[in-house]
Length: 120
Image (cartoon, rainbow, N blue to C red):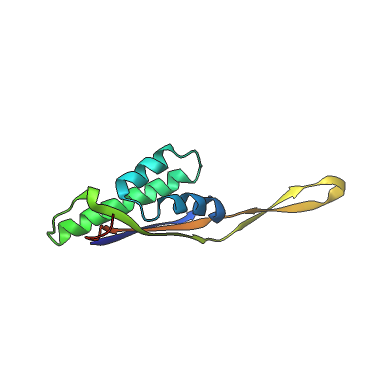
């Protein structure tokens, strides 16, 4: 059973979100939740919401197919962050000039699946 969740147009830079996603890739769902809950990065909050959504999607898919479901057997099989659209803003600078500010967004995608027999 594999489930997927995606958050799009999240107002966090992809570079910062990738740092957080790299910490949980390949970990069990329980361990990933604990890591995200106690990590100081601001991007850990939206990633935690996506992870909880993926777990809920797996629970729903298991209920639909009448399969047994154990949340403790789930593993983050794949996790990646893509770049979303960039909002462009301008800030006034000295001598009548303006500088561009790039407000980046990201698309966070997580896939959770069951542990394989020989893994971990």
